Image: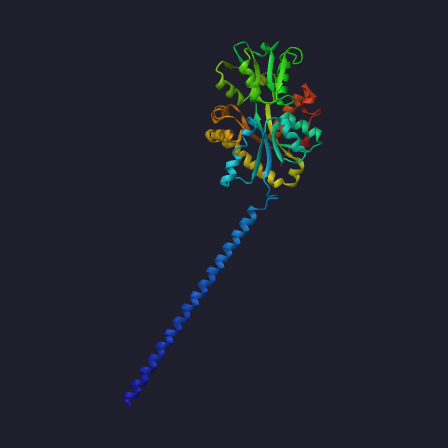
Amino acid sequence: MKKLASLLLSAAMLLGLAACGGTSSSVTASSEATASEAASSSAASSEAASSEAAAEENTLSTADPVRIAGLKGPTTMGLVNLLPMQEEGSANLRYDLQLYGAADEIVPLLTKGELDMAAIPANLAATLYQKTEGAIQVMAVNTLGVLYVVEKGDTVQSVADLAGRTILSTGKGTTPEYVLRYILTQNGIDPDQDVTIEFYSEAAEVTAQMAVAEDAIAVLPQPYVTSASMQDDTLRVALDLTAEWEKVCDTQLITGVTVVRTAYAEEHPDVVAAFLEDYAASVDAANTDLDGTAALCEEQGVVAKAAIAKAALPACNIVCITGEDMKADVAGYAQVLYDADPASVGGAMPDDGFYYLG
């Protein structure tokens, strides 16, 4: 009986141990299942969050590249850094940057809707606004004064010394012509009677003429002043037209502005806002990363050589002035031009619709 009792007790203990072992296995499996479900839920949440973030990043009203045009020279030097920004992924948008030698090449493309934005002379923007009945708006001032009178020799010490001379220039019907005419007039020189102004389509043509003429006088913008001086050490900067402007006028001398088609701005206000953010960053790079910007200027054909661009950049007055400050500066400049010659801004002062304020 004792042996039987002992056997029964051992069997009971074995059954108890087996039961405890089964319970432990069940709890472990349950814990593993719970952990697995939590991990799956976390992964799903992460994927959902990533999808939502991606969706937020792609909420612009168009995915098409912004078609923007510029002219060879300073008004486009502030745009070139958009391209590496795009490549490295720091730009908000994609860009199709197109370069032209003269403003009259850009105008028809802009008015026909084949461009979305353009960097053009300030007075031309006002004229286009009038002629197209408000089809373009100015978003930003991109360049302040960059015009200089240069000569071979030492005959021009003041504006008065320009009387009776032949002056070579670019920009007929745009900023260079009207700035020169205004300064001459304010100094008692009739631009139609007292001087002869010969216009060329590109600054490179003016510098070529300077190279073969012994007594040539020219109005050139940066970076062409630097370019011509590096090629011919007999060339001298005689007058800074920004300084001469400030002697006879109390407004900013504005060389270029960046405009947008009104219809495009109305359809894609988010894209315009994103562009202005990118543009400010590009201009900042142009003023701080001289080597990189100079290399881009040569690569894109904005300036012939990187060395020229690097030397000229500090004198190019590249800016990105937007909003109410832009409106005040452009309106003041346009008023001066209008008072001197209404045709310079299209026959009438532009109204408030001319200014894109976001």
